[in-house]
Length: 253
Image (tube, rainbow, N blue to C red; front, side, top):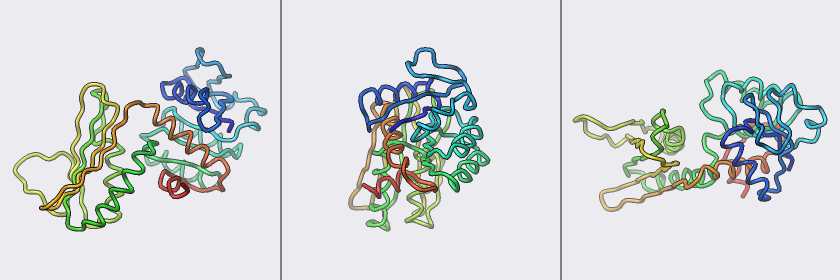
């Protein structure tokens, strides 16, 4: 599996390179693109997509993106132009940028997920099954991240909550509990913790008056996201045009 890696100069780019060198998913990084450059990487690197040679494009099986959402327009235009499968592992897209991804998926296979952890994907599916099995249970989500993360709740916590709303259509989200207001049965509460160097922890509590089921995922290293992105690349590289995510990946296992 030959990969063109967007964002190769960043931390996650380094993680993808490391896993590829270790033979993960048979990945080979052909070249990288990064506006900041990547002098310390041992593969050809370009600052913009237009610099990538045609022969490299012809050899590429899939583009994996760990850059910045501001580059979405250039990323999707390049992938569509060269008819290359695309894994978008960058987050924070604006509605307009998300639309560009959706438009690209009409012409090429695009894998796009809020979180590339296989464990989180399994957590979501298990939480949905539990919420269905206990229709009267109350649900709370707790997420914790390092003190440098500025958004709360995390995108992953929101993805879990929205997935739960698929099986609890009447559920409403309650972000950050405070004050004297009593909890309603329809609420899905979300609490956020920011401290230290926590890579990421997500916990779903599903409770009735008689029992509580706790589902928890804890990330020990950011390498798990690179691992998931390579799994996504291996999955999507030979798929027809369309939009794919972790749910479709798990369905194929």
